[in-house]
Image (tube, rainbow, N blue to C red; front, side, top):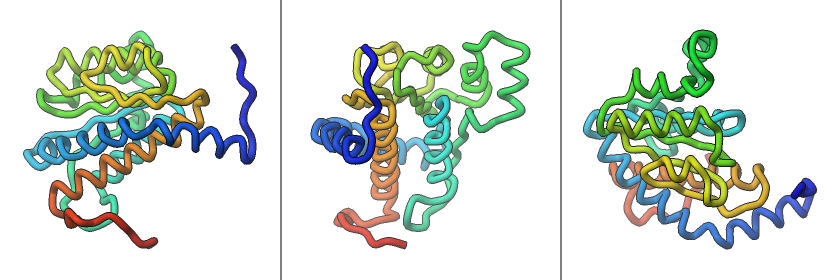
Length: 202
């Protein structure tokens, strides 16, 4: 079925409806941030990837970890695989399309590292292949997708699946989830107090 693209207030209404079902995703993202803090603080690494808009969000996540989310703290090792342009073009030139991210996962990932993969459809073949390679290499694989069922959610160790009809809505809530991950990580590391519930604009 082909859906009409929501515009103006209809776009916002789609987001409002999806937010009403987003509670379980909030709990997953918060738990991920707490667990990720332990991995990174022990010297582990986060790898992240996606296609298109999800690639931009993967880069957003790694920037928050290498830089900072809000309050100052030490930098942590995080690599956005979809931003490695020379590697991407070399792999695309020499290997099948499914290897685009999977080969980088095998190169950079170590057992115990975390691999975060984003696909609004959950069916991007290069992302699913990266999940499968990550698990084979001993990484913990977390997926952010649209509605279940989808191949990426099945291939990952854990999945945060946004129940929304439109790609834009899924992407918008993926960004919310990533910010919740970052806040939980900072809280676990002591960069923000346990009681922090409100913020101010910088």
